[in-house]
Image (cartoon, rainbow, N blue to C red; front, side):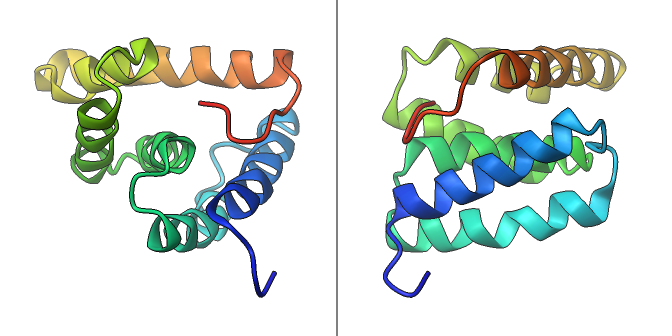
Length: 125
């Protein structure tokens, strides 16, 4: 995708992530890492691309890179302060060590369920 837009790259990453989740392979770090470059490229084209910020922070949470995920979640909320999922995500990420793992797992489980129940939409957050 030589002339891909941020939306194009996000759509490709979203589709790959949906397939991974549908196959129950979300714990496979190599698959998660394989999707991330698409989102990094999308953010290189548009640093404020909310869908890419959202998905990249989710993928970072999946591999337990919560400190890195906080940066993207904070940026997402700075751009869209009323983003309910963004607030839930940030709450999970910044909670105390005892609660963070539980809240993060619950948040990711909810996102995975939502992902498999809804059809893909371009540019949706």
